[in-house]
Length: 279
View 1 (tube, helix red, strand yellow):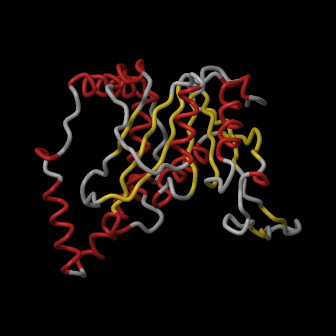
View 2: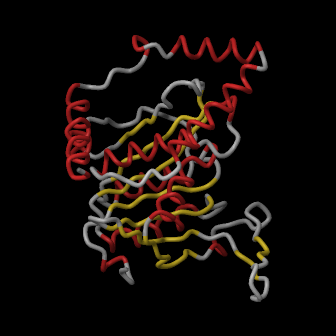
């Protein structure tokens, strides 16, 4: 494994933060999934002393099952390398900072610039009125002209409050790092953690952007089990069942935003390449 970011060749960066940006932990669960299914190593941590309010992000006392003494784990942001079969990843993950966001983001961007990534993917998840019984939407946006043309995605038209993911994406763009923001939809009426169906939707989008096939592990079965469980819960309440039926009606194909022909063609070509490589 590389011992510094400058030793990594042509990496893709994946970033997610716990908290406001990450409904049902869908985005951070994806990074935990990836780091657990591939060889990974923590390169360094960004010390949380300057960026976390420990009355909000509290430290945790951990008692190992071995004879080792108990120790305290402090909130921090970890930067890891992950070895895929054909390339390396840089993974940035941790709780959303509580203060000094500009200084924090500057530290992250400075580290990422030394890696010279070909792509930075900033991940998040939001509560929406999407029905759990349908494919959960994933939205992508970029301010980068080349990426917009290559993937058929456009800049976001959102205006309003943002989290640290939005601040980091903006800082990456200003620093000349090619960045795409990717957000999964989590049904607001079942926003308990985890939501593996949203995590799987993010994994599929990351595969498309990176043009690779990633280990899915138990995610597909967990997603199906989650949907079955939500079906049972909603079926027990006629009001909720009626609400879900209304949401399902609103997601008819005629009401969904249509992808461009270029976007569909590009996605299909990447899919074929990945599957041919697998075979």
